[in-house]
Amino acid sequence: MVFMTALFMGIATFTVEIPYVFFACLLFTVIFYPMAYLAQVLIYAFPSIEVSAIIGVLVNSIFLLFAGFNPPSSSIPSGYKWLYTITPQRFSLAILMALVFCDCPDEPTWNETLGVYENVGPNIGCQPVTDLPVTIDHITVKGYVESVFKYKYDDIWANFGYVFVVLGIFRVLAVFSLRYINHTQR
Image (cartoon, rainbow, N blue to C red; front, side):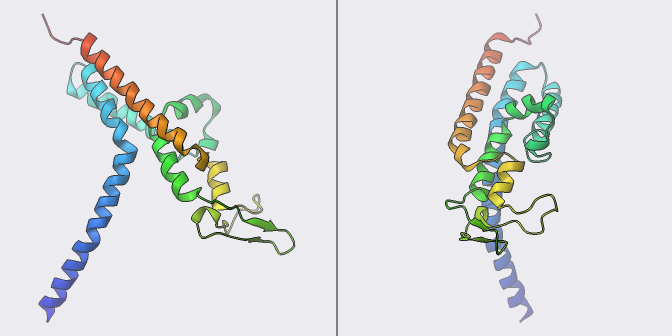
């Protein structure tokens, strides 16, 4: 009897792991796919794999810091906004966050007399944020994400286009590096 319980537990664990691994891989691929092309540029541009790896770690660390998630894009100092603007991961992250947290076709209305939202839709973006600080009176998830993180649902297609522009820029840089940079000793 113990064997059957372990067998079913193993089957259940295996069955649950398949969708989890699939969606986790899909999520990481969407966000980090442009970095594969950045790696090609670095490998073609620098004389050794070690130097390329060090520069790649440095560039990825800077890009992940300024992707607009932590710190939020509204908190990035104005002197560093240009880093936020050129970060490739922010476009993929903005698409994913807008799809999940900013999808609210019909904004709920705030009833001043009752102090609650009316016509709250089923989407996450339509839900009111609870336990807010004293400085914020009331806001929906969509409003919070749009004001703090600057991820907007209307910008999804523009961000999608920017992802392809970044891929194109990395490809062009890789081709130029491959064509014009030569590390052979003569």
